[in-house]
Image (tube, rainbow over all chains, first blue to last red):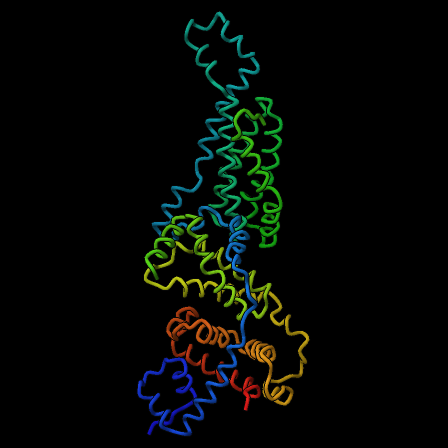
Length: 252
Length: 183
């Protein structure tokens, strides 16, 4: 006859024993029943180990605490196809945008230097060719729109940065792109006399430089310090500035 | 897993925050209970729950629909709790305990039968005396009602190893709780 061990009785208690006849065997034996009853009584006591109650709105509280830390792009698949897809949809368009705004910056600089309207009266310009095209360029609005797009991407990358423990190659690549873009936008803002925007973009630069060049080789402590800096205010400032740029009729 | 939950998970995996919020609202209490039993500390449990949900958001694209979402969340919670406990002082809440206490000597120091609070506290002390693997296996089996196969999957160990952890945990808990059983 097979010896019934405490392990057998434990499996029986949890309904996991392979032998369906074991329950009958235990019930028919006084000794086994006593052992099984003792096991039940002792394990039943463990049910008293109950956690402190949370309120009905605990789930909402948890959501409130974590929602600001969830990056939009975090849930993308990490498989090979997913990574390829992610590389297409990640914010890679900073540089292209920066190049176009650089062109605007040059135009704005020339307009500023030549006095804008005077170009229209320049006798060397053939009638009906350049004056209309130059007049149609609202470089200020274009700059505002472009910087707003740029700040959205900065926001995405910084959110991802504060929520990941390790530096990735793509992170530094985006930071490099954004650094180049940021400098061009800053130059454009200076050219247009928008010193507040230029100063804000200048404030962003040191962090982007660190992200682009130091985060990869830096220690975990460096990364934690940078993450704290971003959390402590920079991320908030980026969002506020972007909101201000998106407000109609508000110049920054 | 219901079709509605599958639909919500798919939406969350596509980056839908509102869908993920639904999952947070649905599973927060259960995750807190597990985190608290693993850590034995209220503040730690809240931190673990938040951290686990942030990890879940990042990894939800990897979740396979043929698996149990609850088990998947529990695996994340267990791993998060283990990381948390390794980083923090694990027995802070038991500092008032006499350091010379040994499991086998406790019977002499405890009343014959205890109040519900005594039992709860003694269970907690006994639970925290288990190894991480024993405690995790027992919690997932006894309190969360997972099958042994599920517990093994959550802990990423073999079914045999899982059973051994449960057997050892049950044996130790019985020794600790036996003096409290009313005769």
